[in-house]
Length: 133
Image (cartoon, rainbow, N blue to C red):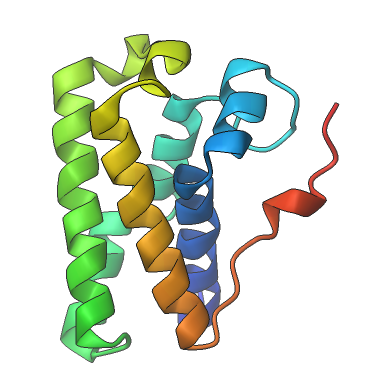
């Protein structure tokens, strides 16, 4: 089992990718990074690699995160699920996606969550220090 602190950090580091439109443009559209290079890969990291749904249930049971942050994480999970179900994830066009007002709302939710994590001392991956190829 992965240590809780590392699990939280891994989740945060994927959420910061969801929050950052510049990262998405450079990574998802232009393919200029070695990190998640598509929306699908980012979603797979969050859902499959880091077991986002299990993470939420675990944090709720163990009270590992402030209640308001957990509520926001659940809202993000629900919003992502809806978005994925509406857009057939394996055929998402990231160029169109980055213009989609529904996606902008998800980005804002993700940024709000990142701000909350920072307030409790958890720093996300600094995407400004990524080496672009």
